[in-house]
Image (cartoon, rainbow, N blue to C red; front, side, top):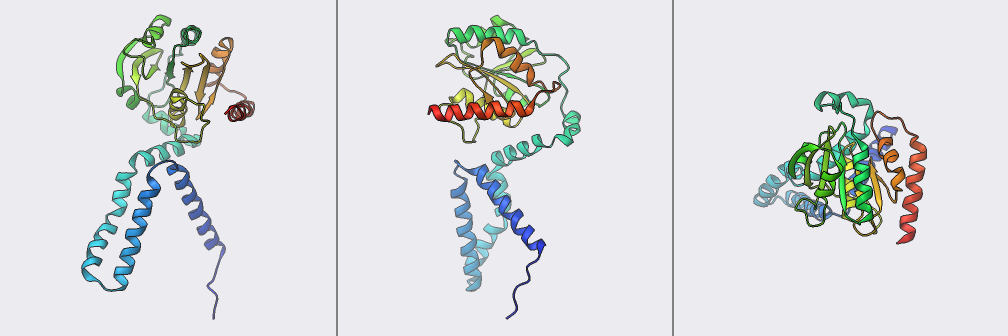
Amino acid sequence: MDFIPFTFIDFLDILLVALMMFGIYRMTRGTNAPYIFTGIIVVYIMWVVVRALNMALLQTILGQIVSVGVIALFIIFQPELRSFLQVVGMRQRGFKFINNIFNSRNNTETAVQPIVTACTEMSLTKTGALIVIAQESDLRDIIDSGISIDAQVSVALLENIFFKNAPLHDGAAIIVNNRVAAAKCILPVTQSNVPKSYGTRHRAAIGITETSDAIVVVVSEETGGLSVACGGKIERNIAPTNLAAVITSHFVNREVDKPKQRRRWKREEKEDKAAE
């Protein structure tokens, strides 16, 4: 009996499929997607069995279901696919010129000091806040989910938005071109594995920075702690005196010490896990 020929291309094919399946698993972990995939596999196996047994009627019905299965997958997993493609696109820095063509650049330097002052004062009173500073990524979908404001950034405005009894305090404020574009905006919550000690605001801050270059400042309602998220990572328990420096270090036109920044994030993640 001759052995089935196995070449390097076959090995590469299997490896790529395995990596793709692992990526799908990581993307759908913690959702209902595995159950949907199981249903699809069961239907496909039934179709193969029915076709082998020449059951014409069932073969026709199941064949129609299988034939439209790809379109159904795109419809069912539209949010997950969009998030996945956004993450992939964010990592392709070599194609940044495409983003510059379709998105309008932020030519106005963001005034950091009013944000820092407002967050520091809200930290003292343990007033929860979630402030998104837009950069080059288009956040119009996020802005449309909230209440339009379009006002100059100021300490009084930010404190009034996040005042505990204010109607706009629940949600995020979006700052674009040095103006508060909207408040009470809904942010996507991260699906990645984060420490259980992270609250909804911190998870939302990570979520929006996973698919955009925005910078998010968080004030914890429980502890008053200050955090800054960018690039899908969050730096917690920042001293008020260092908040301005941390925010400006994430500006897209500013060079920072990336290896040192990653080491600091890993150290803080270990401390958060140890505290659980």
